[in-house]
Figure 1 (spheres, rainbow over the protein chains, first blue to last red):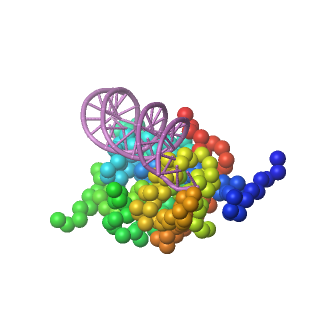
Figure 2: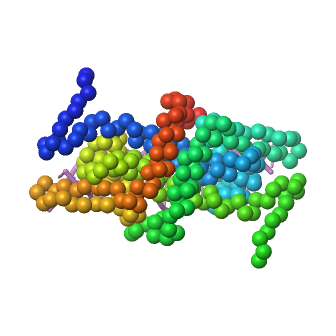
Figure 3: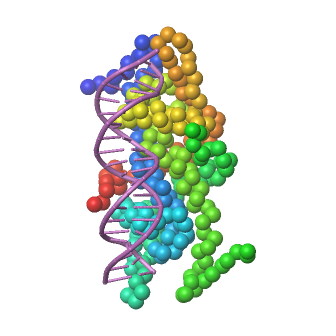
Length: 126
Length: 126
DNA sequence: CAGAATCCAACCGGATACTG
DNA sequence: CAGTATCCGGTTGGATTCTG
């Protein structure tokens, strides 16, 4: 089937081919868009961090969520998990080279949201 | 109270002051992190678009979600709504200058997610 | 055309308690 | 220390129907 290019009743531009790029945004959001996902990744950028430290760094997130996002990031290859020794069990998480490729857009997001006025924007208008 | 800087039992670095920056990421995600929010904004970057066109552009999103995100974006000042005429009612949405400031990080996200392999990443490991 | 209303399912996230 | 288990509420998102 050839590409359809139709004009609307009043000659508006075609809309049919518009769904190529934004899906990418949606996909990225699916991976990085969790409430804590970005923060976790961000905290790992300077070196490996242990579970409880991460948990403390990200005050506000429960250990459950940390663990959950961590396992998701691990499954997707952005984060690596490493058990250190056998006494009081110790686990370090580190960002992978692949995970590092995501830091650019996280940084762009950070930059943007830091430029926001503190109030009125994140407050729901209702 | 002075800033506390404590060392862990094995001399690890302080963790107390770590919660300054990543909160920004979380905030940004709260605004742009909706499943369709980014796509909507992205589709508006080239000029005003009408509701149903937007709905068609973002195949996969229900009109309910489009309307909901649109109202949220409007409340936050990233998008402006304008009623055009009075026959078959017509409404155009356009991105505001403020909304445009978010395009940079959306573009970074798009760039990143386009660099991803098509499979294995968005699939859930389970 | 541009929604609002309703209903419903799935997921997300938090609190608490428990384990090796 | 590094999680897991359980429960529970809120939000998100989708389908469908209705309206002016």
